[in-house]
View 1: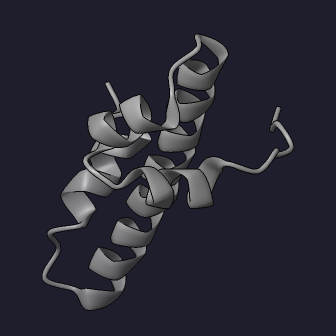
View 2: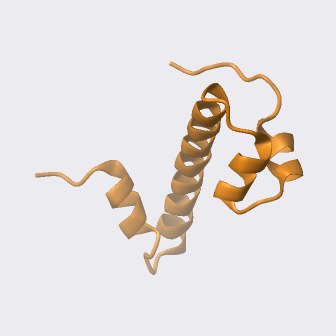
Length: 76
């Protein structure tokens, strides 16, 4: 059985080869950004305030609003 890509990337992120490790970190960062955007959208659709979202993410209300406050095109 083959490991899911995220598991493979997580393992590669600790590689002693900088090229492998840095590419894995970049892939995980893109995944994390996509998941954060998805969950912020979910929270807003369910009526969460920017403050509630910010508290859940451990950032300021201003930071989360700046990053996610403008309408975005949906992927897929």
